[in-house]
Image (cartoon, rainbow, N blue to C red; front, side, top):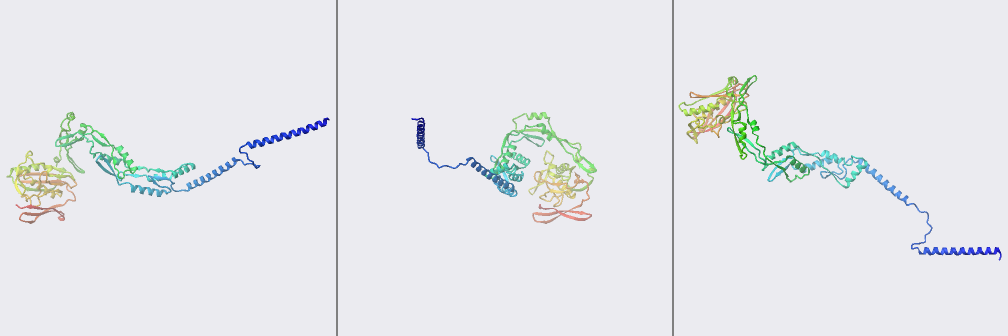
Length: 529
């Protein structure tokens, strides 16, 4: 076999071998694909799109929508002139209201809700305080401004966030409470003195010529600051409606008795009387007052801690110049004079007249001051020197202590009317007395019936009186005024019955002899003897 034949045969063998190898590879491939569980025949696909590009498009769309929504929301908020949704003032919804509407709504709500007064209590004790008295009010104007500013005080993002949060939530604004703390404090201090279990402070008073000091006891007082806070809270929360506020109290002991301070308070220097000419004025004398023992002695008396009451003796300090010592220069004009007669044979009655007259003699009344006969003359007692003399009792004439002094009263009454002074208290006798006519008398009974008049002139007056030689006389001195009148008294009986006498008296004022006025003094009824 030639070489060419051999090469040719080898080539053919190689081709045959390659065919076999390819068949084996194809069969293995088919076999492997058959074993694959999800192997499907797929047609030839076109080139796939990138998923990241789709996500980017979606994000862009979403962002665009949000930006547009943000711009629309921002524009709406910028143009909105009302309070945003979800805002409340005192739990009242003011959403979408104008400031004026919201203010009207809240003010109307507060006015209709708050009571006129609050009730305070402590145990069984209750009292009330008017809200208007303590100036209760709410600052609605600023509260509405705060409500309006919700969503308007930050940047765009902050404002939109606040608006959204109030839409889905709630913002409540409490108006500031205003009240008059000073007035409320004054009210609570007064209430503190009315508590049933209050602290009782030590006190003192003057009785006759003694200073009486009483020791205080421990008790409760109003805790002012705590009670004010409780009141503020109750008003702010509107819990005062039909609900009393509990008064906050605290225990307190009475202040220690300070005898030196008490002495300083009661001590008074006597003042001498004097007068001035230009301008004319009279300055009356004044008695002074002081302890009749030393401060150390008074402290020793207070040393007994078990005592509830202490007595410190007092003494009167008299001025060197009393008012009735001032000469006629201070009272230059005789304003009126009146006298009555008495019997000098009844010595006891005369003594009574002189004792009463001596008490009144020299009395000075300042302008506006009132004279009280019983106060000036005092109680008619044996110790004062009064005697038994005829008096009227239950329609009968009997002897009584101080009998006859009503003649002094009646004489003074007529002098007072002639001086055109203001009579403020006067009573007639049961029977018409012998020393004056009907309706010209004035009776007194110590402790029950008094005779009083007022100095209604512009200057002081001085009363001089004397009882001597069967004449009881009163003179009233002062300073005449340009508007003074001539005074007349007209009295007369208006009727009689078997048991009674009726009479009237009038004061007639004249100027230059002409009647200016006629004033009724009294209408009186007397029993007949």
